[in-house]
Image 1 (cartoon, rainbow, N blue to C red):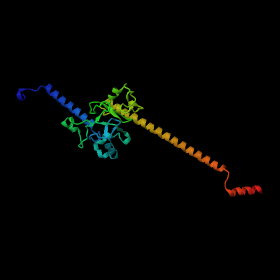
Image 2 (cartoon, one colour; image 1 turned 180 degrees about the vertical axis):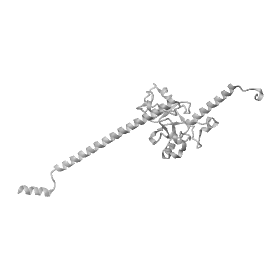
Image 3 (cartoon, rainbow, N blue to C red; image 1 turned 30 degrees about the horizontal axis):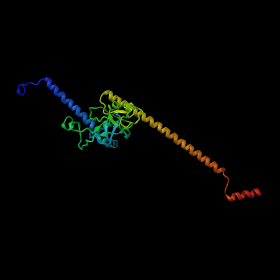
Image 4 (spheres, rainbow, N blue to C red; image 1 turned 45 degrees about the horizontal axis):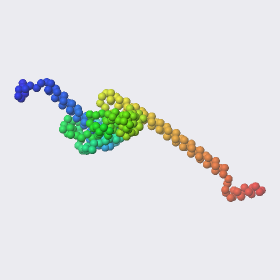
Length: 261
């Protein structure tokens, strides 16, 4: 009943090895997920876009999906919440200088292999230079599209730099109207994170709908005002023309003849 050499494997050793292997697989899966397009599983390449649920896509893939969803088969379920290009935001991503997207397709089946361990992380945080490989939380700002590590906000707070007041972007300094609602976590995982992402998405869409309605109302009011102004101008010109003295010589001559008679 022994192994080679007369040794017997203890259960604790077997369990420990299995657990370690599983952990490595999960880490590799996360690295692949953060390095590939959520829709096509192709390596990330500029330009990138992000959706309200925190997924990262190659922009060309999203455009193709919007034009012909049936082309993507079961992957279409990933993008059910996308119906127009306005449902994503262009991301200002900082790519690693050592990263070069490969043409081959990357799938979850390679997770845990040597290929994944050697895979260069595509995106870096421009503030902390941390890699977006699944080990560090990342987020992007919906208002300006900047993509960065979540911890960057803590590092610059109180330094006087861009984003130090927690109401501006830590990368570009863009002022945010709704900071908490506009910060979207990249690939949320826990139930709490997923619920928060869904709540943010709904709130953002409601706000955008209200803004469009307000803009439409303002545009209509401006058009009405312009029409009223044009109407008043036309009326003034007509009255001015009617009250001007005649310069026609024949009319003046007839007027003199009548007065003489």
